[in-house]
Image (cartoon, rainbow, N blue to C red; front, side, top):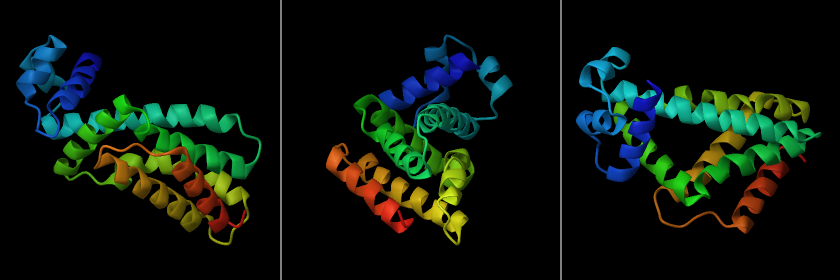
Length: 176
């Protein structure tokens, strides 16, 4: 299954914005249709698995980054920077573009796929003492994803000043 997931990422990046074919993914994986359909009912399920795997990798990275911070505000800032970093690297940006365009076609909601990423904000935002930490975390999450989406659609990468501004804006909104 790992070979198929890795092959899907490679093919997605290569053919984007076009939709990849199962046969291309199977060939890239050095696998067979039988093996593909043993793990996935079709492309939609595969793309969902690719996104879930990608989110799990980002969550693992962010958990490591947040552990380096002692303060809740530092954790929120690190979360924002680490999340936006996914569209700062040209390779990660092309993969994010390809995968997100295919996920949109599957009908799976961002909320479902990205919940583990959003959940990382819950504890540090609550520790800041706001009256509605769940909504506060949602707003930081939404602002950060909206900023990322600006870069998914274009060729520009986020500038450090833009990321700094986003961090400062979100922290001010949290009362920091």
